Amino acid sequence: MANTFDVAVIGAGPGGYIAAIRAAQLGFKVACIDDGARADGKPAPGGTCTNVGCIPSKALLQSSEHFEMAQSHFAEHGIGLKDLSIDVPKMIARKAKIVQQTNEGILYLFKKNKITFFHGRASFDGKNENGWQLNVSPTSGKDVETLTATHVIIATGSSPRALPEAAFDNKRILDNEGALALTETPKRLGVVGAGVIGLEMGSVWRRLGAEVTLLEALPEFLGVADVAVAKEAAKLFKAQGLTIHTGVKITAVKNSAKEVAVEYTDAAGATQKASFDKLIVSIGRVPNTKGLNAEAVGLTLDERGFIAVDDHCRTNLPNVWAVGDVVRGPMLAHKAEEEGVAVAERLAGQKPHVDFNTVPYVIYTSPEIAWVGKTEQQLKAAGVAYRAGSVPFMANGRARALGDTRGFVKWLADAATDRVLGLHIIGPMASELVMEGVTAMEFGASSEDIARICHAHPTLTETVKEAALALDGRALNF
Image (tube, rainbow, N blue to C red):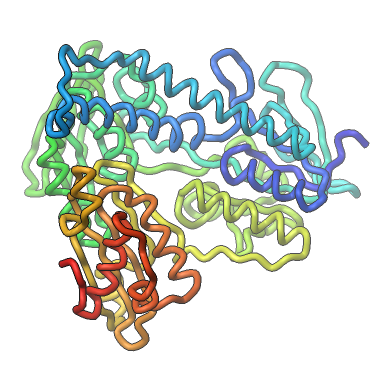
């Protein structure tokens, strides 16, 4: 039958489209269903990451960083510029082109791997002798299609959480999509939530001239990061002009035609008021399960609305799996990809694994922040004896040549066995350098292993080696 498949994947974000491709590589007949659409109505696979998250945000971060470099740092290289300006609509158009290229690339991969793509929204419609029945409501408004699949992989992702008192309108109160679509720089920008999205979007518009204020509910800034990294980041971001308030509780938000007025209590319990031209709300995300018809087939959700799965991403329903933001674990595109691959391989009888402890975290600010493994505060809380080694980028010749010596590299290793427990970086290209820590941890390496590896000179990676040497008090260049 034309609409009968071995595997149907609901969602074409990082977890979904990668699961579909891997399953097809393994010989399964695969369908992938996704309702993402561009302004012209054409399919926009790639999920939040491609369309309104990872990819477009990095495009704007790169553009705004170029502008700030030209404005503030080219002179020290002997480069003089006159009448510097920023064309925000052109910057946004470049971002949109990158997104479209990525959409089209995913559709090409579907075609290359003989995956049948359905542009629409899928929901469960029961089970028959051939497998699970899914109804697909086409985005184009055509008649509902029905398909049957032996296995179903749910990869429907997540959506931004709104403040209870302030719904998103993406005119003044913005989610991540609205923050990426501004066509002019707001004079006063408020950001509720100083996590990854808040810091990255705040950085983009601060570089382009906005007065940016971040309001964070948690008492500590970047509490998920290593405490030394968080302290350094707070110092550097404040020096750049970001205003950061922690321990904030939003008590009222009034959205008018001219501004957004925010009332909150500060860390000391005092009432404060602030007005903004735009307000970005980035306080977390909620799993997308609405519309799956989960209750009709008995799909179990946990107390927070995530699809309940075991360690292998199996749901309570036979042959139904779930990956990515819609299940437990970090809401990261690369985690979703790894889970998607693992599920596809399990269907083929293989024995893959996904280790959450070696999933890297990255914040693409300037300087970048990246880490993998345990933080010092986590090791202390767990009573684990450890040693730490840290070296600043100021001691690195390549960093000095680049003109960016901010930050440091820090290794954590078991005090008894020397096995690497974590790597924490704030500084240039931290997103790339952190992979040395991921690799080390996956292979059970010791800090001595890193210290004994020859690193090219002059490179930023030498700081990674120096920090490993510093664990034993024998750094050579610091």
